[in-house]
Image (cartoon, rainbow, N blue to C red; front, side):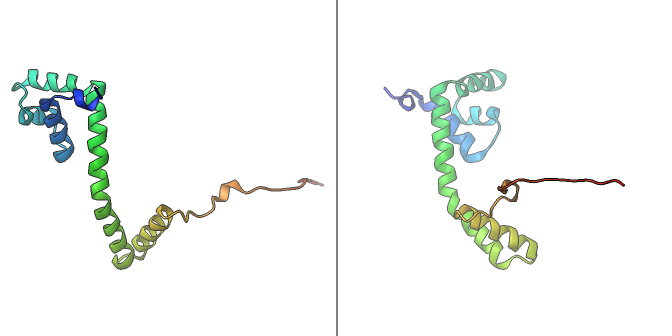
Length: 123
């Protein structure tokens, strides 16, 4: 039995509601069929701490982010091409290049070969 198969229908509904709406645990618990009020919120909070429920939540969050990544990429391209501010266009373009693997060289990691001598004559 896999960890995700241990998740009950009520726990799935709780997680799915949280991931889809971003509402509070109390609101998600009510929508998922937990008891009303504080006892429902407490039960839902305890359920969310269970390892198999956390694994299911991470799976759902990953799926949701993956599905919305195309929207984010499209928005980034629109900003790079048509933002009124040149600064916004520049930052969006740098972000696109960075995500494509064209990150600029980190200037703080310069290697110096050879011997360096410093002489200070105060006379």
